[in-house]
Image 1 (tube, rainbow, N blue to C red):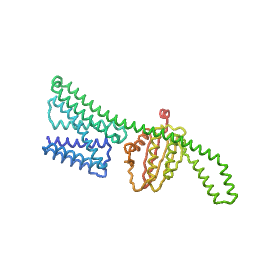
Image 2 (cartoon, rainbow, N blue to C red):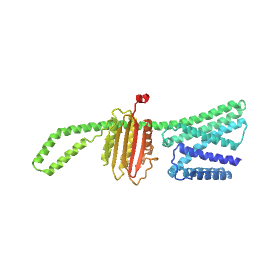
Image 3 (spheres, one colour):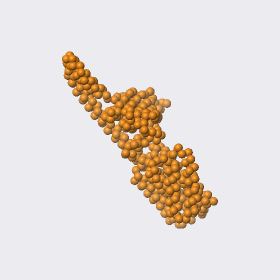
Image 4 (tube, helix red, strand yellow):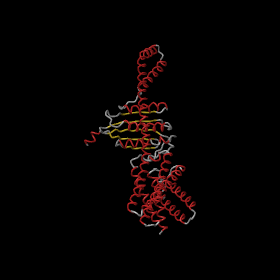
Length: 437
């Protein structure tokens, strides 16, 4: 019976590890391996039975750690170094969460004089597993993989807080159990359980606080970018207006000189000068205008950047006169998607980017497309940044999806051969229209 309880406990422990990896860290599963969970089950059971026979606790611990590392490697397909670090951190966190729940169950068992170590450990693991899933419910509204973007120093800080909580709960049990439990068992159980629940609530609040802090920093950066792009756009318009005035001032001279070349029969000089003037006119008329100042600013900036990199960028269509989508969400969507498109096109054989804007009475439809290097096989379900500063750039597509969701919109990513197309539908109904419906 003891061996059975211990084996079941170890299997539940492995489920805890995999749950944290999936629900909290969002690690990419090896879906191509259909038998990965069968392998995990066999490995966890055989390791549990093997460790049960070992008397040396240090050797048993090393085998336990190696087993967890192997299980995470079997189930997830991240970089090996990253997997090893994540597995070790998850192991530490889950171990301490189990210690918290074990302290609560053991203390209650001692008070009630119902002592069975293996059964108590089984109940404690079940309690810890429930807590892991309950806390994950509060994280569902957060961006996907949000915990993975928390800085390492804060993750270490969270782990230290968790360790301190374990020590506090353990100290409370050792100091107060004999003195207070015999006086009023029910009151002691309620008080001790309340402290334990309070600790788990505190840990949940810390996680949410760290994620919210990162989200706030990310939004602050996007707003800063938006303001910078607005300033650049107005400077761009000012410079364009200045160049236009200069050209208008000189147009009579250009026309006079062209007329003179034509009369003198200098056809080659005429053609070269004429093409130069036409090119100048085209350059002055290359400003982007889709009927929305914010989008114009972002498109104009992207247009200039694409031109510098010899990338052909075409913009067609327009926005509605009354746009109910917030400036923040427009900036988030266009800034990230245009940057991604230009970056991909810069490494492609066909150096082209296109933007199509359309709208109906209630919706705004946007298509942003580009060609990319055919050697790179993209997975639209798991798009990742290739930039060096992953701490800041890894959130781009997640922020786009988050903004689209808040705009009650839809996003579709289509990848065919060397063509990458993002199609977006944004809800453009105002609050009054929503209420009327």
